[in-house]
Image (cartoon, rainbow, N blue to C red; front, side, top):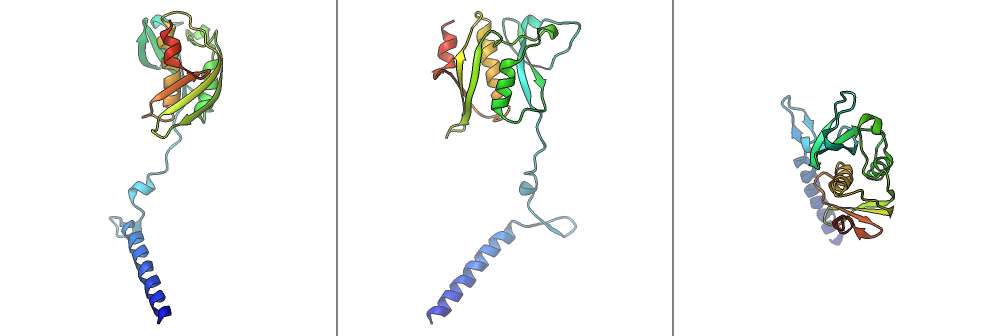
Length: 180
């Protein structure tokens, strides 16, 4: 008797599970079955990745055109440079911090700083926390929006809807920038 209840219970449970699986299968226009589109669409093309730098005061060098993302103050433009080798926010930050190409009109607000990326992590609220160590050199009031924009945009491309919280030697970036 007990064995019969167990078999019945297992059979009913299997039917419930199978009916739930069948509900996720849809029929195409031609009558064949397929996974729902939401599942099929999970294949995402590799996104383009960028480092973000500044073109000061709308400067043009040899008629160069730039991929301008935003105007960030002091007449500066935030521009992006595509880099297919970037696979993580840590790599993008490291490359951006070390970038130097003034001959093309690019300005990197971190050129005189010596910063290292410790780690980048997502918090429980979905925000992104960036931890840097080293020396941050702020070259004047125009560097404040440059520094913030370069860091935030470089990280946000990996988690677009994320608030970015940046810490330099465990001090919030906002605190460091407000001293200027």
